[in-house]
Image 1 (cartoon, one colour):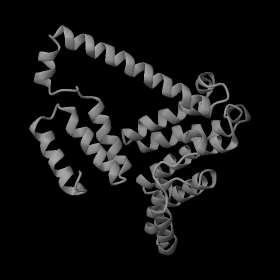
Image 2 (cartoon, rainbow, N blue to C red):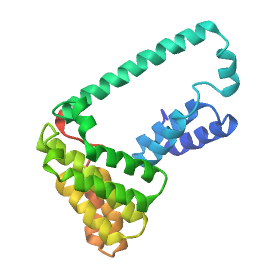
Image 3 (cartoon, one colour):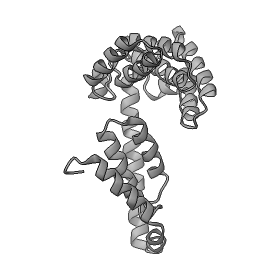
Image 4 (spheres, rainbow, N blue to C red):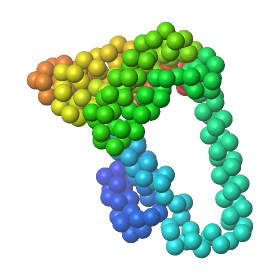
Length: 233
């Protein structure tokens, strides 16, 4: 990783996984390498596996769990980590929703979006499309839009539904529908690198080569996961 030889790094981390499949650390390093390569989807899938594993190899985890000092330290760390995560979530919710956590809990769109995300992770694209469609309908209501701190933030959040539904259409080879959704996502939030990449893929398959190339060039000039300035603070 330090030498920037990411292909060799991925090969070594894969070998480490094979040596001790239940050990979290190689998965975390592998996920970081995918992130360095701007491979967001592989980053997410590898990190998801990492988070389901124990901190130490299973044989060592078993031994450590009998050590009272280790148990006490682990519990203290877990409590501190949970508190920090909750604090971060509260701070982000205050930036997104007028009433912070209460606004988040009142958001019907977010619930449909989370449902779609889970279905998308399971590769259930048609069902995910239905969930994101419900999210889009809900987002377009005055009650939902009134929950957000600004129009910019609302548009940024709303664009996710079109971006993800567009990706689902891309995966089931409904390329024209994919382009339509990704156009809408870009109209709401024109700074998402992934949206241009996905639209570029769909346009290329549809034979619209010049437009496709323009999207890929645009994507190359954007940073991954760009968001409104208020959410970056």
